[in-house]
Amino acid sequence: MVASEPLATADVIVVGAGIAGMCTAYELRARGYDVAVLDQRFAAFGGSGRNPGAVWLQLQRGGLELDLARAGAALYAEYADRIGGGFDHRTRGGLFFYETDEQQEILADYVADRRRHGLSVEFVTRADALAHAPLLPSTAIGAVYCAEDAQIDSQRFVRALATSCTEAGVKRFDNTPVLSTIRRGDTITGVRTTRGDVHGPGVVWATGAWARGLDAEGVSIALTTSRMGQIVTQPLAQRPSVVMHGPRGVASCGALTDLPGFRREAFAAPNPLGVVRDDPDATPSDWDYDDSITQFSDGSLHIGSSIDITGSLNPHISMRATQSMISTTIDRYAEYSTFGVTSLWAGLQSTTADLLPVVDRVDGAYATIGHASGMATGPVAGRILACLIAGEHHEFADSLRADRPSLTSSPPAHV
Image (cartoon, rainbow, N blue to C red; front, top):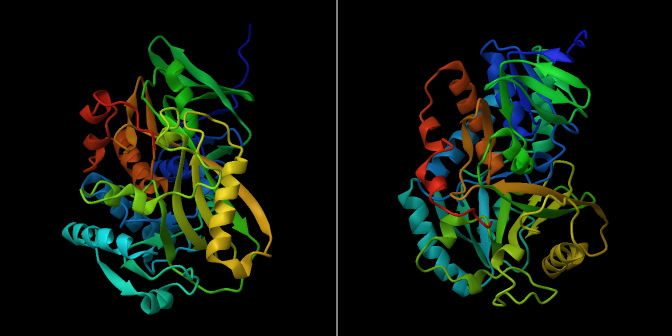
């Protein structure tokens, strides 16, 4: 039997065209590798294109989590120079606003901790916060401002990277689900897709939440998935505001929730349908919220993020999540209650036990998966993995290995 012609050949095959995958492809091509990128749909279809685009530094835990976020934030500025600034990169900082005196009291410890880790943060009055964010809700009485927070339009960023990669000679295949790797003994020689085989000695898994299905490929890394929802309004009048985080749900604010004086009840998530959180059958993983507000350059308001359906790959936003976001928005912005909702987004997130990504060689392939803060870590992970493949040193590489103790001795995260 004559073997059929392969769909393509490459030095490295990147599976997944989100931020992690496209940054890896870009960095590999810059090092001279012949690269092919495959995606089951298209660039930025998944979680990389379904998020508020906030690049938070003030919310990251001190240590490696914050170091990675800083490196990722710096790379956006570098990419703006290299591929053009068409992805709405804003470096005006971010606000964590509060609505009660109790929240302000707890945030005083948060500000002190952030300063100890070298971040430029300060309390600002409501009037000063309004100068940074004219869209500040009427319920806010003050805020913590961090000059180092930033924002991008993640869809436009990934698509700009994809265009730049294509122009540089990267082969791209949309609507091309990967079925399995092709192996000769223990050696990977390519991947099998619904459109044919792609041959190459290097395979990178950058598949986001779908990395949970990689056990069959020998990638046995414990990941927990969750669905993060957002609503998007029709464009409002442009009132350029920094990214904002509120106090009604702080699921992704490890720098705050790890503090000894943190009181969860002071930062309770919206609960319009009466979920009983202390019911033994209703754990925090069943329902949570990460209170964010951003405005994009087209004027649309992005509000979220609901967090539910842990452990599932169901991408459809729930009615409970929708109601929580709508009710929170109307409470804060009654004047916009007649505005249309143009999109209901749900992006799937995957996390490791220590909430840090895995960027490593695993069972003959490579992986960049488990990005809890993908807006911040995706770009730097792409560079780390390109360095690993090219035999170059990177200061963070050893800390993101798949066999690090914090993964091998811990249960999966439930964020």
